[in-house]
Length: 430
Image (tube, rainbow, N blue to C red; front, side):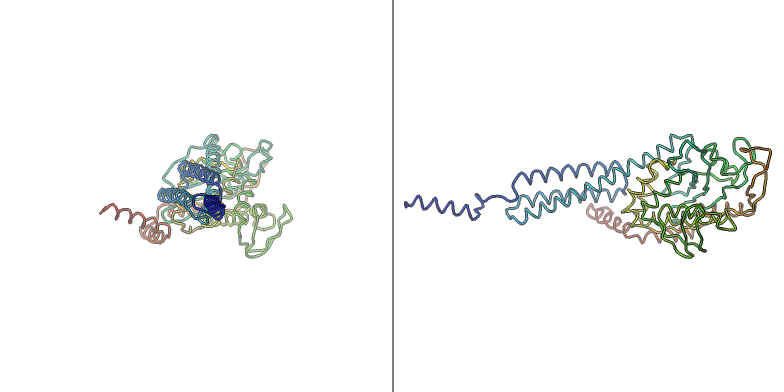
């Protein structure tokens, strides 16, 4: 064998064992190109939806944008490495990155679409115009009207307002006051100026309900939320159920459900019939109003918890679907979400109800040949409830100071503040 043949054998042997120039790349180069291309597309989609949906505070949006771009650059560096284990690590990183970013992007897109659908349904309906405020800085009232229908019953029955509740929210003090109004409350209709049951105002539209309550209580309703049985059931299920306290044990007269005295873990359908029950109690509608408050309080507490907000928010919005409408804009709803994500503070939720007693009288929407059961509200109870609403909307200086101290302890708020301070120091700002 000649010297040249030996040299060729060495070259072949060296190539077989992995020369830097000749060794076979693993993974192959097309895999790198595809991985980088998919990561780039996922990053672009994520950044576009992050800005478009506007679901996060600006500071967190910037942080996540920078982090995403850095991860993309890191993957490219690993792919370019001469070491095989680094290139494989880059592939693993790319797969995880694509999976996570695509999932988050899909979540934001569905949430953005649902928020616009819910808001559009309320804004296009013949309901009252919203009295808009800065929902992250100013107190406001939301009127919850629950229609006694399932989704499949739309258009086949009259929409009576079965649940009537004013939710007073003060974002500064993190206080929520739930004021329940019995469905049979005997009130003067806004349009006809005749006496009727409050529940019958729903037949004439949500605007009649809102204006009638404003006339009666002398307060302004900023927004309304209208939902039916299906929306309540699906939203609670999307949250993973709620935990509701019952002072007494009872059975539902509408379905085969039993509720224990004490805490009950309830799914959407169970919670709905818990709130609807009245025949099992001597107080009937009065007890039902209290149970409605318990369910609403449980929903708010579960929805505003950090775990639910971060992991189930998209499911909750999707569950609302076409069965919930509001005249609150999608921008205002996202502002509330951003505020909660920023401070993750707990809300102080209180309840009250308008008291009275049952009697019989004529109602405008039914025949005048006979009297019907109505709920005559107590004037002192009404005044007390209105005063409590005013107190939540106009807190004292001490309450505002205490609330400010509590919010300043938020981890996210302090983290963002720290980043801002570091940026200011780097710029030389005073």
